[in-house]
Structures are given as C-alpha cells and as structure tokens.
Picture 1 (tube, one colour):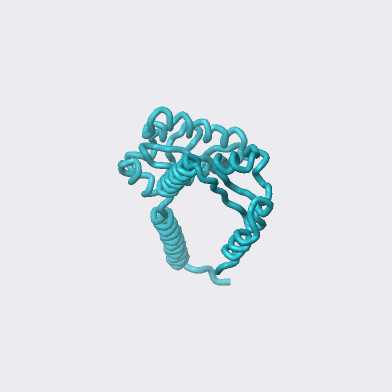
Picture 2 (cartoon, helix red, strand yellow):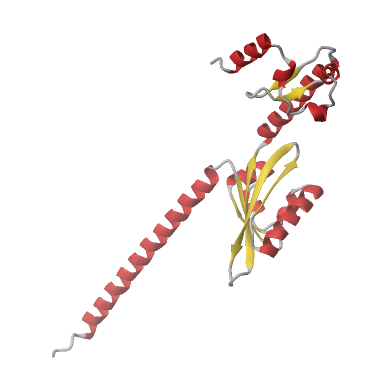
Length: 221
C-alpha cells in the first residue's frame, strides 16, 4: 500500500478542520437563533418574568420587568431584586420565594405595588438533584380586575344599604321561590328573624296572582 505524501495528509487534515469549524459555526448560529427567538417570545408577553438565585440576585428577566421597574436590563441583571421594591413588598415577596426554595413547590399569591395589583406565580428550578437553586416568577397585572371587583362590591353595598333603609318589604328569590335576599322591613312584616326566613319559600307568603307573575318573570326569555 502506497503511503500518501505528507503534504496530501496535511491538506486532508486542514479540510477536516475547516469542515469541523463550519459545522461548529452553524451549530453556534442555530443556538443563537433559538436563544434570540426564545428571548423575543419572553419579551413579547405582558407578564413579567424574572429568574433569581437564592440570594435574590437577578439572573435574567424579560423586557416587561424592566419597563415596570423603569430600569435598563443591563442595570437589572446581577442586582438584588429586593432593591427595587418598597420594604413591605420586598418582605412579602421574599417570604414567598423562600417558601419555594424551602419546599420545592410552586407558590401563588397576590400583592400590590405602587397602586398596582399583581397575580404572582413562583416556580422552583432544580439543579444538583433535589436542591432548588433558582426561582422563576411570572407576574400578571390584575389591577383592572381588582378595581372592577372593588367597584362591584361598593355598588352592591350601596344597593343593600338603600334597600335596608326603606320601610317597604323587599325580597329576592331563586327559581324555586326560596328567599335569597330580603331587607329588615320584610323580616318585621312577616314576623321572622333573618336566620329563620333565609331559605324559606316565598309562596307561603305570596298570593296566587303574584306567585304566577314571579314564575312568568323567571321563564321569560
């Protein structure tokens, strides 16, 4: 068997190295593309996403976090997340995150910061076996929902206050005719306490004509 000249072996080795370099570059470009696409997805969401270690140091975060905190990403990464919250908020969130680190289980909670309400979902990130090394938190702005719920409660409270102040008896029933709400005046008129009257059927206190009207109202589309 004739041995290849040394220069031919060298040329072949150079080509192999060049091919390896091309493949390595392609793999790095593919990885960078995947990372860029994943970053774009995380930055596109309206939820804040932040990854912290056991000391509360920010490892990574999406653009929404930076916008809500009013800080550039490069000024956030590597800093302690607690430095950006009021003391009472930092304390509450810190307790929840410590619970995730200690138990290895997700924790969900709601809190407020600077007039905004958030729904927080914190998840453990495991490494080295069962040890939780990091926690990733997704926070959703629920301010509008909370404000709507508070407005509804206020409206219902005002509505009930008005009904309790009138002298006429007022009541509400379910489809079976059982009392679901009534004012003090109705309780006095019928001679029963509120506890006794709740759940009783209105038909025994309502004449046939009114009972028929109530039934027709429930069945009107």
